Image 1: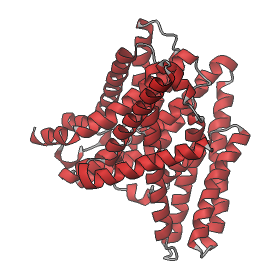
Image 2: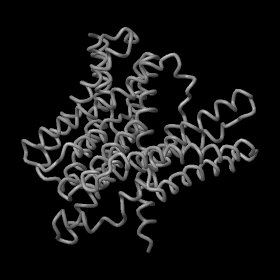
Image 3: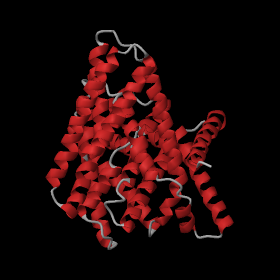
Image 4: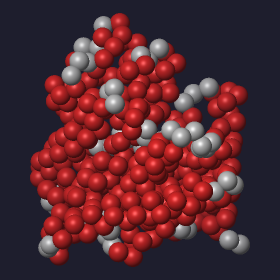
Length: 416
């Protein structure tokens, strides 16, 4: 029997059942219910396997790892998710709020990564963990990008002002790419500790990814705009992303950054063609919207089922708590500094209330876990399990705890 097909069936089954129950019964935020249900499924599978095999939890977790989760996330899902997020970016729509969106997506993401990195470096010294400063900065770049779309969908039900909602959505569209770029830079520092040549690594990773992304997109778009068949347009976009990623793997540059470049470049070319009135991309947009939802759902199920891996982290509870606190401090600190660069704070929020709303609304998503999983070759086994466990804890806390309390936090902020 094909075990991979069995696992795909289980994942799709969980998505279908949870989606049905949530639509008919729970009426909660979809991502939250999906993650919680998947964690229960993962725990149940672990408990059942442990009883039947009479083995320890660690042994069971090793034996039920039937496929390379890291490989599937990094090489199978992440590239399409990055394109799906970045190609929606309409550059002309950002003219009015280019400054605040830019500050949130670029400055706050960078500042958050630096604050988290230095905080965790100091704490790792207190606990006598062997994390270097570049490794801690890499950790900061992993947890700095936010995924506020789920928070926006919650808050819009309670009258989230339009400009504030646009800032949240605009930040989410840009900071995935910023986070991936920072990750490449700081992981390059980690690699340079072993092999040297940091600037050579960065030149290859960043410039190579930019070149591949632009060239592949421009060539593919020439075919795309001349096609009348909507299905072939979709196939062309899939080829563009996979080709860009494969070329980056061959040239040893960042495939993730290349996919973001593909999305931004495609959006710019599309905007230019749409002005002529010749483009009708309704089916194309519908396909990528469905694929984005499906990939995110698959990712949340995989995260939930594999959540038991956090148990492999030493000092799991204290380190999880420290990771969550550092995440909140770095997020709020970067936002507070960013408010002095935003210009007028929108929709009548005070500086304090704006920072509080965006701190609690800054949920972490699957990108953080996917990036964390890609560090296994850069870190020792112990440090890898610590980093991965901390990232899992942050994603769980922001998605479930912050997501479930978003309504009350927002209402309290508006009353203040």
